Amino acid sequence: MILLTGASGFIGGAVARKLKTLGYHFVSVGTSTPKEECTHYEIVRGGPIPLIDGVDSIIHCAANPNPKPDYDNPNEIFEDNLFLTNRLLSTYRNQIKNFTFLSSIKIYGDRVAKSFEEDIPRPDCLYGVSKVAAEELVRSYSRTFGFDHCILRLCPVVGKEQTHGIVKDFIERAKTVTDKFNIDGKFPGSIRPYVHIDDVVNAILLADEQSIQGTFNVSSDNEISNAKLANTILTELGKINVVDFPNNTEPWKGDSRSMRPSNKKLRSHGWDPKFRTAELAVRNALYF
Image (cartoon, rainbow, N blue to C red):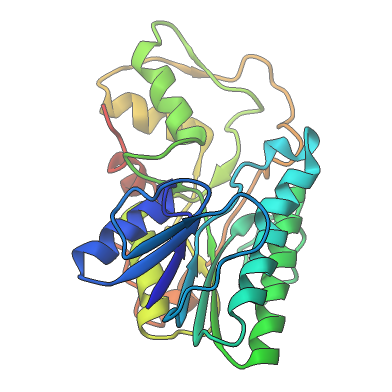
């Protein structure tokens, strides 16, 4: 039986819906009630993780996904992304056969060249550091206690129920903009890939069902700039507003100017994304 964390969130909720559709029995541990009905759930806000009989596989989606609180409360980032992972691994170390962990391409930091799974992590924010440390915890527990593990490094995930992020922000602004569509930073803005939530769920289930082991980037085939992102959204709205960078400023600390992960390794294990390009992922995430 699968234990799913973060089932009340954007990604975990999508995984829960898919598991329910496929007829899986699963249990959930999290800070709030899961979006989908499951066999059993436990509300946990700090402290010990409950040991639930019958769990032999874990999909760990729970996390603090926002790098910006780094500077307001660094402890929160490590509590949510590192210490929670440790408590989960410690509780189930002798019971599980497989552990799937959702990491992030933010572990690579700012890179112009393609990033591959074998590259040395060079995170440029505390969020990325917390994910690097959590990855090492997963690998160490896996080696020590003999269960399989899969680490999925996600690029920015988009979908109609997304709760945060630049795509959601741009969509909301594009609905009401009447003049220039202004963006912070320098033209053309940060360059990054985007992956659709449906393709992320398929990657997670592929890892769990086939017990794929190792570390994999989950990403679209290409990347787009903030300028291209804004134009894509405006075009879908039927607007012709000019995209502008009036302040010509540096990005906020922790924002990577360039993220270019390779998805070839996961593709070689059978992952075949429905929305292969960043533009397709974004267009199919719009909720006008």
